[in-house]
Image 1 (cartoon, one colour):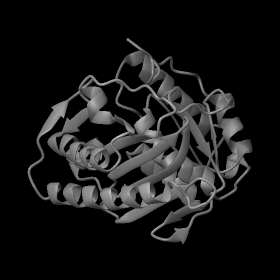
Image 2 (cartoon, rainbow, N blue to C red):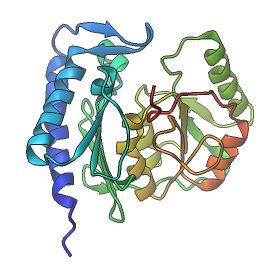
Image 3 (cartoon, one colour):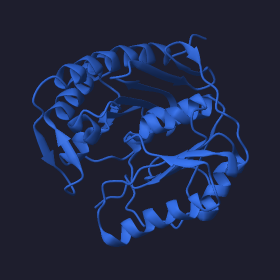
Image 4 (cartoon, rainbow, N blue to C red):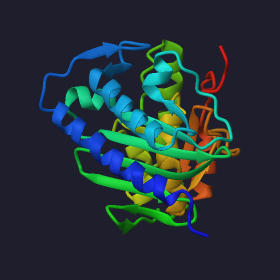
Length: 278
């Protein structure tokens, strides 16, 4: 039987490219910034414009599908995941980078059916890198097959994470103490590129050995999650248990051994789930 979702994936790649052009053009203009949940949680007119373009294009083509988009959720729409084919969209992952013209900005599109990720597309716009992953079909960057490092020794690993946009003293304390605990294992180093999707794609390329974070959202993880697993990596919960897309927390690692070793060190930040009804 022909792959029913291949057409959707091809369309997602086309849309991500188109969105990337909008982002690159916007980088040449004056960027107007708005603040969301904290002074470090930013949104721009471009985020909203790109999301609107992607969602309206898909709605026209696939009217029966569902959507979860970062900016629509910010505007009050729900983010409940059903079994219906669902597009999970982050129009600009790395908005703070975008605002500062720090060159890691991605468009992320994940496609989930029966609550399982079928494919993911992450387009790193400034670098012009198109990352794709399709269930059972492998992961690629600009057509080149991706493979995780397979590193199993935490003391030889390079990790990626983010500080997050939450500036509450208690949360900051946990974020920094988690980094300190990992650094003193010791690991080779910790990097932060400023976008969850690109951080995860770097693990898929073998450039980093694991990524962990708490406080992100399903739209940060849905596109890149399948790219990691198709490149031979694993997704875990920060507790070391099974990964849950709506939990707002993740360890994405090149091997289960490294993922579980990271989980041992992490103090968990309590978070409201993406699908929690207020």
